[in-house]
Image (cartoon, rainbow, N blue to C red):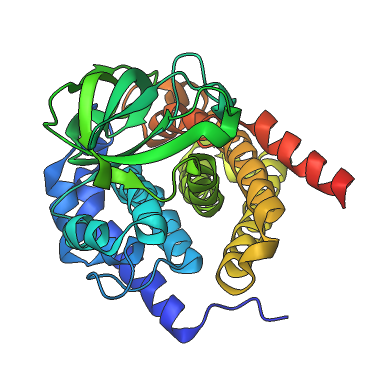
Length: 377
């Protein structure tokens, strides 16, 4: 078994790390508090050609491979969760178009993604349908050469600021999950609107509404009634990359804890000299390493044996996000009162990490997926 990155993957990791530390670190404290999109960060990501990782060859990208996406997300989230979000959310929109789109759809939507000229949004969750995708209420009714969509979506990351949206609606109310279809919607389409929502942590997110929103038939994405497959295959890829982002956040929290414990003096010695501190740090680094291995195992399986990675993706997302929550919490604890001072790095990480345990499938949903798979096997 080879636990090393390839030379090309190591070069990507080093490139993203240098970029994040040199270009993003000076502005991270500011942009990571934004509830809107930083187009400056998008421009920087475009200049580094990182959006090419989320678009396939032939359309300006380099292939939509899981391992490179996870490498980029880990290194970006270690410095700026905002930069990571822009990459990931556009990837969630680009992947279903790349995989299920017609040639015309690919030519229209993917090249601007590759250049970071446009951002994408993946609009699946609804007020009454989160984890239970089959219960979504948004409808799409065929009327001549158009589909008329009515309904709403919530928790749509980058929602008010994207230009391209992949969304899901019931095209057959009698078929349950088999009656769901996927569509591509462009910003400015009559009847389509977005209103910003506020979360406990910084995050550009929106509620989207469709009011007699008329889409051409050619905006159907994939086959009619196969929207559930479109959604689940997309989540299978990006779910593990949420784990990579969690590893990056945890790594940063651990580094902050190491630095602070070495310089903070209490009772005549540095915090790092106390055994209680050393135990915390040992648990942190062990958890981070274990999560990193789970993430990259799932990513490798996705690239090499895609039919075998559903459970591994859920394991990676579950363990890594729960791990990061523990690590960040312990980093705050080691900082004492300074850990909850507004503007401290660990305070910001504490607000950020809570979201990762919820989106793209809560920890409880990941356990259900894992349990069903092992019982079926």
